[in-house]
Amino acid sequence: MVLTLPNALTLLRLLLAPFVGIFLGMESAWAVWTGALLFAAAALTDGIDGWIARTYNQSTLEGAFLDPLADKVLVLSVLLPLSWLEIAPVWMVVVLVGRDVCTTLLRWYSLSHGKPVRTLRSARVKTFVQMSGLWLVVMLLALWRTGIEPHAAWARTLLYGWPVWGFFCLVTLLALWTLGLYGWRYRFLLQRIRQQ
Image (cartoon, rainbow, N blue to C red; front, side, top):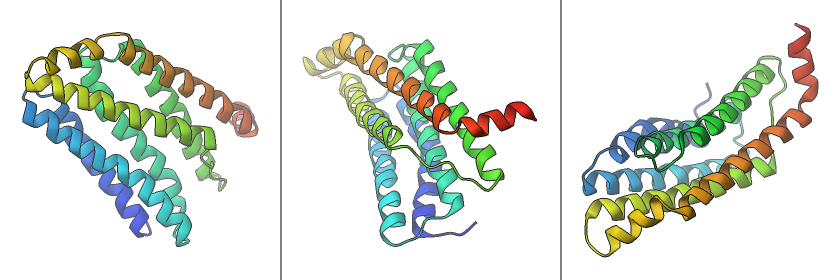
């Protein structure tokens, strides 16, 4: 693997993901705030590594595969504690993870045949909406865990109410839509897989 700065940032995001999940799953406010800060830092590396790779011509095949994989692992590290706390509906998490597994397998198969799958613009929009929304949900979780009223009660109401549920519905619809777009755009690869 060629260790460029964008690839190093992607690896950093992969390394931070388990710590994000562990801290967000704890009950203490300091742990959730730590998880929120780690998530924000890791999410920022997603935009930075792509910008550096494009601007300074440091794109690599490894980075093209690892960058979206790191995004998926980071998102999963947030979704698991949120589903454990019954904030994120389990069925939506299953749909999101299933979509990510499908696109990762498509990328892996395509890369193994020398034709890397390029990230669709709509998938970048989905990732931005998902990361931004998850950061807001994580901030609400941290505010709730502080226990300082009336803010904690307000945060809990939002976490378990229609705003957060609506966000997860939106992200689930975007995930299914982008999965369909990937399927259509790379249908020749899918046909090749079926023929083998």
